[in-house]
Length: 83
Image 1 (cartoon, rainbow, N blue to C red):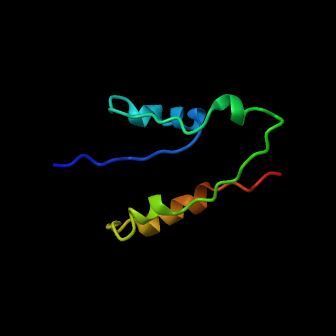
Image 2 (tube, helix red, strand yellow):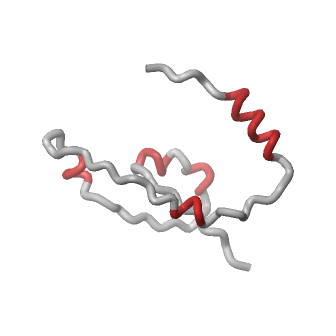
């Protein structure tokens, strides 16, 4: 049986927020940029648009009958945006 691979991208703080789900799992960390360069206030922020590749890996793989329940939960737990 092949183990499912989970790919999570984000800042270290965003990755650590998943620590409970990843406890006991073997993980690999790849640092994509130098933090001293990205935190410099003089360097411009670069926008990298998503390719959608991670979504395409899962396209057509959903099966089940809980879609309506999931949508209901999303609508019940949404909060209004605060600007």
